[in-house]
Length: 122
Image (cartoon, rainbow, N blue to C red; front, side, top):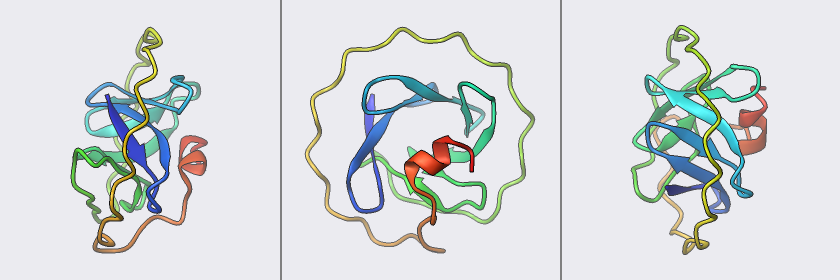
């Protein structure tokens, strides 16, 4: 499980590579399928996830992990909606990570969405 940070380096959640996105209270809020994130409740497509960087539907990063590299991309094609996975067991809350250094602004800039807006599928 890897921490997810906002562009301003605030802890916003956790990511289990190729599986789930968790909020800071360890509730599963999104799942990953085919390098894309989907909401757990409504199956709304949130955007692509590459190298532990969660992007909005325009390909701009919303949240990133210090275990990956911050990246962006051009507008992706909307993928086919996958089947909803079974709810995972709630993991133990990891220790708070050290706050990373602010990364360089990715090509194309950061998303204007907050992590909470992204999770809401706005």
